[in-house]
Length: 347
Image (cartoon, rainbow, N blue to C red):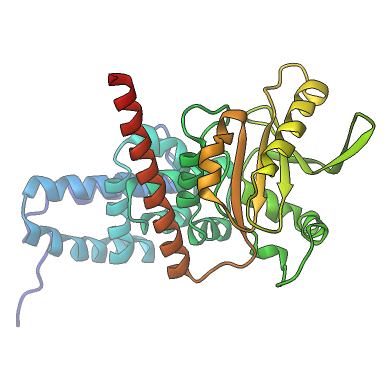
């Protein structure tokens, strides 16, 4: 009968298993041997120990064999949390988040199930973005899944391209497009219907806008030269200390919307801005964008962002394709503008 391989047969580092069991025992007893001894940090330290051990042995075959055997012994002693699949997740966790200075504060606010969702993402930029977003917005696992499914990272990056570097709008405040499928709007609706739907689903709308937004008014009345104007929605962003004016448009963006929003922002800046607040900024939500007009108007310099809204969430592949094409286009425009600026500087 063939002898079953043991940890010793595979030249397991003498201290690896004992170090892992010590970590688990200390965690169970509530002894804090690290700055943050949560369950999530315990998993990170286990993953790091295993990764370091495999790296020291420098043999791929060793890594393939040691993980199942280690998982078998840990599962027998501590239960299903240490099955092969979860051990490999711990190793991924330590690999994808190698710096304890970054992972420790995140682990204090995210659960292990949050990190499991994040580990499946492709790039380190995406993983860090969603981890920080979950921490700052206190997202549940369900809310995090929606943020990932609706490509919040890509939509935020696309908005940042429009904002550029010469804008009073800070990065990561807006998205493009906004996914408003939760409003339940059908094929034919009016701006009034959209406003009412937003107020009904205000919590979901603010979640889509992002952390820091607080609702102030709907149809804010502005009187100028004896004439009444009405701003669709007025919010306040606590983090950047700015009033945020939002206009809803049913069709594609039109150049005249720029002047309308500029008027609202100047009014808010003069008559509504409180002491200590920064200048107001504006968001024009349209059913479609006119990207060449938006680029030429350079509205970001006046604190105005234009974004498309989607009343239905497209299939995953369709949304990915759309955002990929838009990001490529945005990067190409940025590269072209950079080349033009450099040529002008050399002349």
